[in-house]
Length: 229
Length: 403
Ligand SMILES: Nc1ncnc2c1ncn2[C@@H]1O[C@H](COP(=O)(O)OP(=O)(O)O)[C@@H](O)[C@H]1O
Ligand SMILES: [Mg+2]
Image (cartoon, rainbow over all chains, first blue to last red; front, side, top):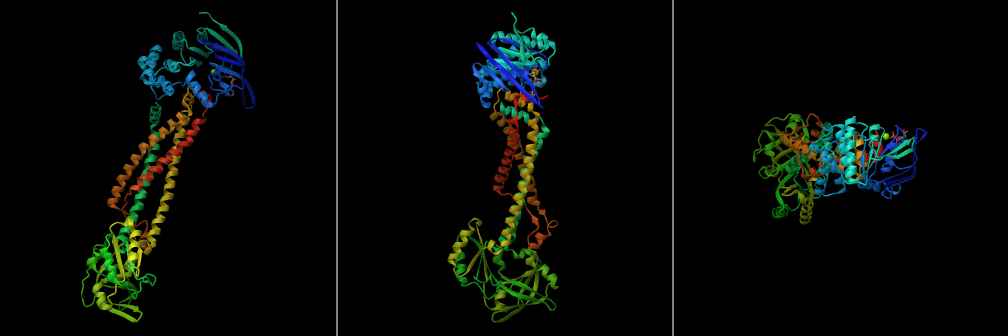
C-alpha cells in the first residue's frame, strides 16, 4: 500500500522577478515501511518536495496523496490536524521546545492529540529507551548534544505512531558518529515499528544506509533505485 | 502542557517579563492611587463643607436663597419644622441658625458680612465652631454680644481682641444694628468664608434684633445614600419652606467632583495607553524571537487556537503577578499618605482660594478596585490580540527555514 503518492508535483517560486522551478514534475510513490532517502546537491529541491509531501507547503501544480487523502483539497486548519494525526517531522534544527524537558517534548504531540496519561507515559518511556535518551529524560534541549537532540526529535515524531516520518537533512548538523547513531536508531524503529521514513540528505554515509535512493537534480527525479539489504 | 510552555516562556527572558509585570503593577498602583487621591479630596470636601457646615440638606424660606440671604425671609412655622425633624428617623442631627446680612463697621473700616446666629452647644454635633477658634472664646449672654471673627477679616479690618464693632443691616422697615465685641478669632479651611462669616450666639442675636427669627435648618442624615428620597419626604411634610440638598446649595462642589472624574478618565487613558504599548511591544518581541519555535510547533500540529491560547496565557500570568504587586504598592502608599496626608498648598494655591482644605488624605473606595483591576486586565488582554495575530500569520516553513 502506498503511504505517499505524488503526481506531476510542481513548485514554482518567483523570487525578485526570476522564476525558479524548485520541484519540476515529480511523481513518486512511497510504500508502507520504506526507508527512503531523497538525495541531491544543495538547491536540487529536496526540502521543497518534502514540505509539499508533509503538507507544509502547497504545490503550484500536481497532486499529493497521503494515505489516500488529497492534501491540496484540505483547508489550512484541516491540514494542521492532518499533520498532527498522520505525519511525524524531524527538521534539520529547532526541533524541540526549549522550555520543555526531553520527556515533555516527546509527550507534547500526544498531549495535543489528547491521548490519556497512561498511554503517554508508556509510549514516551519506551521511545526514550529506544533512542537511548532515557537517562536524560529530565534534561532540557540546551543540556543535550546536537545528536541527542535529534534523537529526541525522532522519538517525538514517532510518539503518536504516525503514518510516516519526514526528516529533512536530519544529520546535517551532526558529526559522523552522532549521525551514524541516529541512523541506527531510525533503522531499528523502521524495522521494529514498520514506520515509513522519508528523509533527505546529501551525505554519502547516510545515503549508504537507505534502502531506496531517489536522486533529485534541478527539481526532477533523475534516478530511483532500490538497495537490497 | 501549553500552560507549562507558557509558564516557562515567561521566565526565559526574565527582564522582559519583569517589565510587563512592572507596567501592570504600575498601572494598577498609579490608577488606584490617583483614584484614592480623588476620593480623598472628595471626602475631604464633603467633610469640610458638607458634613461640618452645610449639612446634607438645608431648609429655608422659599425665597431666602434667591434673595441672597435676606434677613426678612425667615423659616415659616419653625415649630412645625422642628417637630418634623425630631420625628424623622433618618435624621441624625439638626441645628437652627439665624442669618443676618450686614455691614461690620469699625471706626475706620467696614466690610460686608454674614452674621450667623448659632447655638454652639447644638452645633457641636455638626459644626464644631469652637474647634476653629484660634484665639479668645465665645461667651454667651454679654451685654455687647461676643463675636467670633475670621482671622483674615480681622487682619483686613485691623480688628484686635476686645474691639467694639457695629453690626448694621438694612431691613424692609428701616435699619437694624447693634454693638458687638470681638472676643475670638477663628480659622477654617475655607478662606473665603473666613472673610465673610462672623458668628454670634443665636440667643444674643435674638435679643438684639428682637425678632426671634430662624433662617436655616441644617440637617445631617445618618446615611447619605438616601439623600434624594429623604429630601423629598421632608419637603412634602414642609411644603411652606424650601428643602435643598448640599449639592443644590453649593453646586461648585459637585462640579468639582465631576471635573476630577474627567481628569481621572484622561489620566487612566494615559495609563492604559502606556500599558498597552508595553505589552504589545514585549509580547511582539517575545513572539518574533520564537519565530522558529512557533513555526515548528505549527508544523508538528499545534493548532492556531492553541498558539493563541499559549500567548494569552503568558500575558494572563504576567498580569496576574502584576496586579497583586500593584495592589500592595497602592496599599502601602495609600495607608501612608492616608495617615500623613499630602500637602498640596504649594502646588495648588488655586484650590485654597476656592475655600478647600489643601491637605489631602487619599482614601480607597471599594469600587476602585473592581474598576481599575478590570480596566488593567482588559487592556492587557486586548493588547495581546495584536501579537497573537502576528504569531498566527507565521508560515511554518518560512519560520523554520529562517536562518
Ligand atoms: N521560499 C522560496 N522562495 C524562492 N525560492 C526558493 C524558496 N525556497 C526554495 N527556493 C529555491 O528552490 C530551489 C530548491 O530549494 P530547496 O528545496 O531548499 O533545495 P534543497 O533542499 O535540495 O537544498 C532553490 O533554488 C531555492 O533557491
Ligand atoms: Mg534543504
